[in-house]
Image (cartoon, rainbow, N blue to C red; front, side):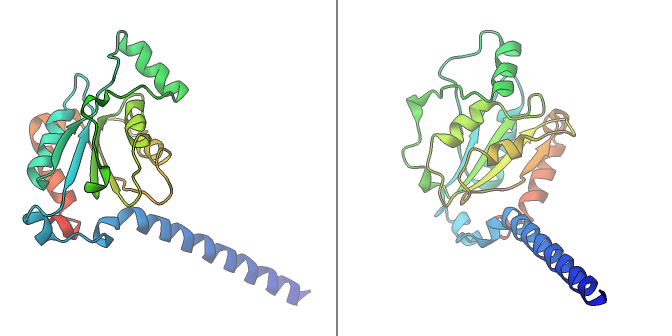
Length: 207
């Protein structure tokens, strides 16, 4: 009897250890990916590596956020645009999120080769705790294999689940970091600049 109990305890310990190990592996993959990819600070300083800053802005400060990231990284700005503008924003935007629909992109200025940009910042507002589904449309429109996606969003919600929805729009071999969340006040007041700088400095390639 004692032997069975002992074996049971051992099995429980092994299962717990395996679970913790998997959690740490996934967490490390999403938190340190920029340090693992083959990009050096010298490359960035010499403009040898292209960084894309894709942003979607609708009557908010997302463009200011994207420009600040461009200022600190030297990346290339690119606007995510809808093929059909909203006619009734409150109704249509909420309906898209609730039904997980994908609005069409305006592809008049489509990116020819997304793989030229190993690091892609995605800037967007958070609506009803989620990302506008046009962001999902953007991510699902390109083969992002090997890219690192960095969400930067404006949100005042503690229930922001937007990053999880973005991860559902890319293959498992694409890394989506947690990124950074700022409020409108932080962006407009200028305090967000320091927060962006501090966050970027945590990665070797941006120091």
